[in-house]
Image (cartoon, rainbow, N blue to C red; front, top):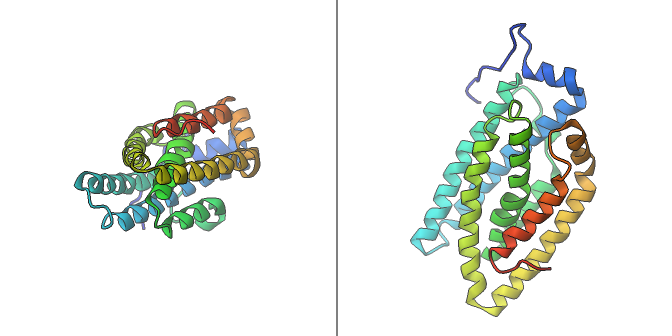
Length: 239
């Protein structure tokens, strides 16, 4: 159960949910719920992943990265809950499973069973957070802050998690050529995943977001650029 959060409403008593449906239509409301629900459950997956690696890491500074990362995600999960309730929708009042994107669960399942720390750092800190989440959070916070509660704050704090991942991944890549080649293989896998994601599963939602002004018309271009930029930070900037 969650703590009740007062929904934002107009003088007439209309909620933001009512405004969204009236202005953009019922499908838009479902897109917004999909965004919130998948961010929320991704945070839970990340908390569990951090917990799995805390006893494995030996370096105290790097162990602390995981502790801080997990603590941040607890806060972010609560903010996503509050965001839905501020729109006028009780968090426990709808079927979350109807809004979950299967691909996200599959990617986190892959990371959760991996014993390759490079794969986890690349898949979680660099790709899931540093590319996909960061661009989405930044654009929604900038274009529709009234609907996406505290997304700007969350995006700023996620930068810290990307920096944690870059620091550890950069060390591992520098340790051996074998590590570097393995990291390159993971990079290629996630680059292909990104292209399939942008042009396949999310294509219609992205186009709707552009037309409605939720994200900019450069969303796909900027997401691809984020991918190149974040991997350049660990010396893997070129395909």
